[in-house]
Length: 346
Ligand code: NAP
Image (cartoon, rainbow, N blue to C red; front, side):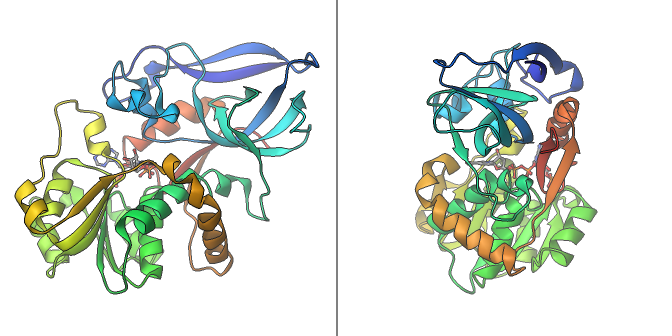
């Protein structure tokens, strides 16, 4: 049997803010009749992840492209891989059967053909919606969990600052930190986001960084006794002022620097004198380096979801054709929580 596989590609490298004209919806026939010797799995994609780091893969050059198997350069015209959940529709790989629900590296498209050795695992949804396994129970959740607990090691009563706090990773960092007994302040790019942080997610306080004219004074206002932990999703000036407001032995997890992704000239230059004399630890990290704690992360997060101690925050668009606008929305601050595209019904 043949199907038509529609998928998204880029027309060109993207070095500035992404826009609709950078993307193309392509279609190609795909046979579901497999050669028995092929050792291939064909997955009907159900939910695919939309993440800021893909932009660094789309650039003509980014340091990220040579440092991780997950972040290699995307070639214009070719399919784009991403994390996602799908259903096996054909398989000659003995480890997978037709009908299996799977999670792993899929494409921004309707189908994914995975050869032996591709990153694909059977998924037990454990009663949760499949979309949770792309976000809160997937890499976004692992990123928040690993960055906060493995790098920042929060202690009860410590003061935690989270940037991009209503994003996919940030909202979970704040929620995890609250459950550890910390005082948590987040910043985000709109009044609506600030209200959600305080009223829905239980942050102690939050502010709209776009309305602030002097970020250093802003942090002094929200943290009169200094910051113990900064979970950095943005880099740039926010990182510089956070360093200036850190306490002695403070910890900073540098998760992402999204404010620098669109501007090759913009780079944070935090005061190293502050870093030295305050003995601040600043560590960059990749979630993919923490697969060893995935089991621990999953059981803790499932338990907290079941007991209502953590709220999932998802922002789901429909259909393969919505992938470009979903991706562009990240760079316009239009997403509320984890951005996902639902490709098909199970
Ligand atoms: P996200 O926060 O759900 O979505 C992106 C958000 O970034 C937007 O909603 C917007 O929020 C903010 N933003 C966009 N352009 C900005 C700019 N120029 N300056 C400041 N903020 C801007 O995305 P996410 O998936 O949770 O990712 C958050 C960060 O973590 C990103 O930097 C990402 O690259 C990084 N990340 C790292 C890892 C890792 O393994 N290290 C894994 C996942 C994500 P506002 O409205 O609040 O501005």
